[in-house]
Length: 192
Image (tube, rainbow, N blue to C red; front, side):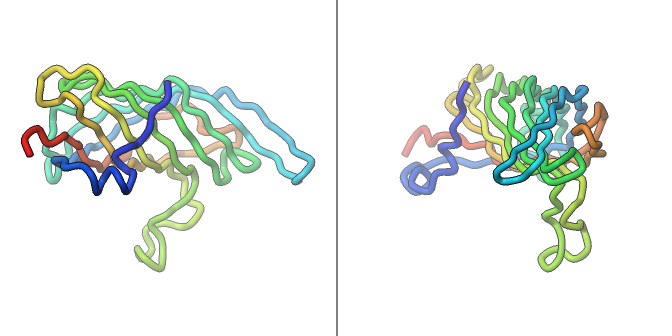
């Protein structure tokens, strides 16, 4: 399954007329046990850790900003792939295809980002984080593939997620964590 984030293409943004609704979700997540493998490279000299695991996210509306409680539900990534510099306590990147079940319908898509990198740090954000903070963060985009109502047909979801994690030397250990998802629900203009 391949997912493209066409909504984030500059030309598509300029060409199309769309409607946007803010999405703001509180997230409770559960990581399954990692299936990890250490890899060594001679040129350039490096060591990495790759892992594969299940990640399940329970999404609930954050009432201050969320306009779509219909998107409350469960987002599952059956194969979250990770690669870390040396071990799970170091900087890494991740990617996985998701299945998001909600009362709006079934949303399929991809999430990808950086692990163990605190982006909310000085000079822009004061002392919120350090550059090595244990966090899984990135971008998510998906398409409503099985809408339950006509108003959700041909709609997309784009956004950013942040999960506070407790890393380990063999990857992200099995654990429950919390986080946030902030995004947009993108609907096509049906009458221009």
